[in-house]
Length: 486
Image (cartoon, rainbow, N blue to C red):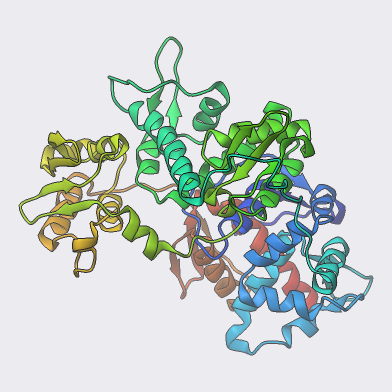
């Protein structure tokens, strides 16, 4: 086994990473494809303090997979610890790997806490703070974080359509600032210092002394992601840099999750916020997550649809595709984009040669030279194909395929000619103590998106380097659990 794999931790010194908490909440039901952060850890006591807020508990419960949710409700009204053997009896042998993965997720988030008694196997119980808050929500219902302002006080409230237009414009302005950094001629306004730091920490921009910011390979890939994935990555880095701006990470997480429980389009008084929250609202307004307005006496903020997506899955991808579709790709590699957005023009320029632009039409062509330039910037062929498919014009979106096969095949061929070998940083694990531990580790690696290769015969597993920390913790717990059961 890897020399760093088996580590012993004191029970009172368990740390839960900020990244793990955020990934579980903000990416519920989705496999995260982002690079793992080695960000600061939230001590167990601080995480328990978060669970004293019913909003946090509701958001975490909402994010859990179905099996984990079931275990939470089974133990919700049990105040004593339940033996690990009893939990293992809940499932059949063929579901043991999913059962252990569900327990591991609950333990990592400290929704379940492990109670170790002398001469006894490990026992589990619900986190008392989480349990208490969830009971109150079920009995009394969850109260909103704050009440909206009366309509006669908050005047000139924008309509839902105006609010959606505002959010889209603000987010596009942010992306336009980012994409303009990828070209020598940049006409966009520079980033604010705080946003520049976030983009640098997330690896989207690089800034050298006496030079203008430059877009990195991760930055080019970021521009072709879906809006929900882009938002997750920025928010994750926003929280990671909280202490640099004088914020408490736990308080900021609580505020952001609470923001997602506000009503879209309703006005909320800024004076009800703390100084930290008021500053956060100003920074979030630059991304279109909220809109800030000033009245005669009062000042208020209005959450947009981007705010509600902070703790919920964006399941309306099909309708979003219809609304945003604007690209038509022909078999002769010509690209027609029916859009007036400058952002769309700049993104298409990342992988195609723009020929001319009319008031509502952008015309270009996908060439070998334009694709090689995109590949050189770190953009993959699959990302280009996915972008063209996701933003296909409604007239062609219903076709199968929406992008001609000769075009997608040629993109892949040109990429394979250029990239015949791909290097990936990874860790290999071997010498697993049992077949069950090996199978559980393989399943968990696939669940977190870190699996690369496994050899069942020799019990060898290779995972991505960014998933090493999570895998090490998971295998350590599996090994400890196996030892206790013996």
